[in-house]
Image (cartoon, rainbow, N blue to C red; front, top):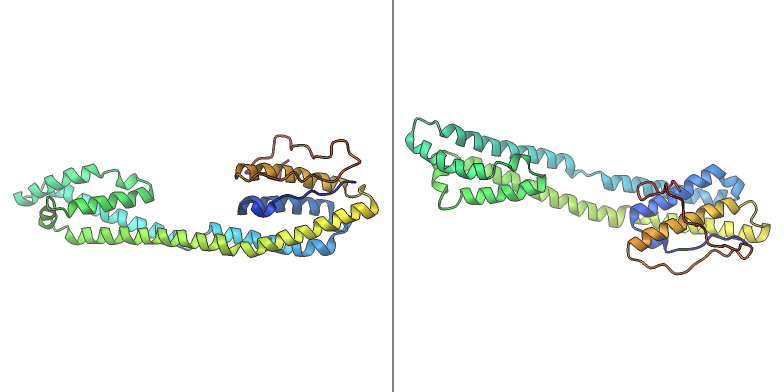
Length: 265
C-alpha cells in the first residue's frame, strides 16, 4: 500500500521550503482537492501558503533601498564636486591655490575609481579618502582650496549611506526570523494534515485513486532531501510504506528540476 513518506521539511531553508510546498499546491490544484478528498484540509494549507508567499515577497523588498540610492547619489555628487574643484585649481591664477591643487590632485587620482566602485566598496574608499585629506600632509591644502565644508558633507553622506546599509541588514534579519516563520509553521501543520488524510484514505479505500499524487509527493521529497543534504543535514532513512511494490522508494527526478525551478521534476 502506497504511503506518502516523511522527511525533515522544517529544516529546509525558507525559500526551498516555500518551493516544496508550492509544488505540492500546484499538484493538488491539478488533481483538484475534491478528487483527492482533501477539500477541508486544503483550505488552511492554501491560506497559510499564500501568507507565506506574501511574507517572503516583503522580505525581498526594502524600505531602505530608495534611501540608499539617494544617499549614494549624494556622496557621488560631493566626491565629483571636490574632484572638479581640485582639477580647476590646477589652472588657478593664485599660485598658492595652484600648488595646493597639484598636491591634492595626486590623492584624488589615487581614488579615481570611487565613482565606479560597488556601493559597499565605495564606502570604504571614501572613508580612506577623507582620512587622507584630513591628514597633516594635506589638510592645509584642503583649507587653501576651500574644500573643508565639502569634505564634511562627503563624510556625512558616506556615514549616512553606511547607516542605511546597517538598517537594511537588521530589517532583513527581522523579516526572515519573524515575517515568514509563523505562516510557514501553519503551512507545515496543514501539509501534515493532508498527508495524514491521504495516507488514511489509501489504507481504507486502497491507493488506486491516490497513487499518482503519492508518487509525485514522494518524488518531490526525494528531490528536497538532496537539498537538505547540501545544507549539511543527514536525512534518516524514512521510506514510504509500499509493500506491494518491489521498488518502494521513489525514483530520483529526471533532469529538469533544479534549485531555481524545483517544480519541474
